[in-house]
Image (cartoon, rainbow, N blue to C red; front, side):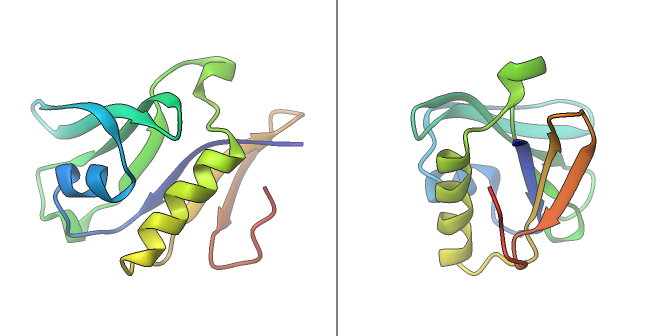
Length: 118
């Protein structure tokens, strides 16, 4: 069994626009010294956080989508994760990495371009 905790990719789009693309609802945007983020609900899953540094151009850094919680609360259900990735790939985002861990706690990273096995 695999538990997915996030995805990462590169995109030049503003976070608010990425939030619209993945259909993030009830979202709030904020930033501080180095990072910016937008947090909301997607596919019925709360605390979905799109974040990255704002010290460089967005295209020069990784953008991460994760669930802003701890332990089992940080898991993004596979159905929601697949919808998010599909919406991103529909606008041309490529080289998406899926992150998580297996039932033994081993960290996993898999390219979504590979055969994705949720």
